[in-house]
Structure formats: C-alpha cells, structure tokens
Image (cartoon, rainbow, N blue to C red):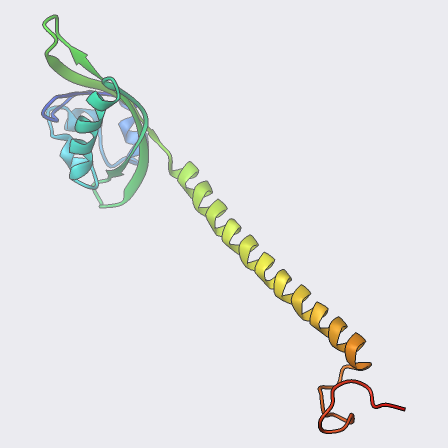
Length: 162
C-alpha cells in the first residue's frame, strides 16, 4: 500500500489497497485528511519512526509497526519510507509503502515454538543418556543393578568376595 503523510501526520494520499490491509474496515477516501494516529495501534510508533528516519539517512526499509483496524484488531506491518524535502531542504512529507507481515510474524512465532520444543527434546535426550550411562556403570561396578546393601552385605558395595 502506497501512502503520503505530512510531517505532522496527516494522511495526504493512500492507495486503495488500504482495504486489503484493513480487511475492509478502512477506505481510501475516508482516511485522506485524517491523522495517521487513527491507524497506529501504539501512539508512540509514529514519533519513533519520525525520530528514526533522520538517523537512517531519511530512509528506512522493513520498519515494523502495528496497524490498528477500526474494530481494534491489530495487523503487524512493515514500512519502507523516506522524507521528501523541498528545494531549501525543509522536510515536506513522508512517502512510503506498507505491507502486511502477519504471515511472516506467524512463521517467526512458530519457529520460536519449534526451537523451544527441540531444546526441550535435547534436554530430555541428555537426561536419558545420563540415566543409561549410570545404569551401565552401576551394572559394571556392582555386577548387577541392585542398590548397595541389597544382597551384598550391609557395609560393602559390589559383589561379595568368594
């Protein structure tokens, strides 16, 4: 979705694809002239972007924000934007594009979940190997798997002397 905003956050232009990102909750004509704060889920995100742009040479790519639909549902989005300046170097507006990254965020969440499950499985495997190793050591040292004192005499571990 293409957009243009004034430096103070008024939407100057927005493509009709806003209807896709908002799942039909916003239409292009109703947003032009409104504040972008109506569509940011968190008010500080806009100011953070305005602060970040000059630090990055007045251009950013894949800057993540959360878009808020009219019903309050949230859509993770990625912004690529730049500041447009007039001939004297005064900032005029921000021009950019927004993409819905819901699928990417879902895949990242699933990846994190699977990594956690893998780590847990690796820990359980290590415990299993440790237990198997202990069983091998105890059988080798004591001749059987009975604990000390179980049929060996009260004060000794290992097989009884012949």
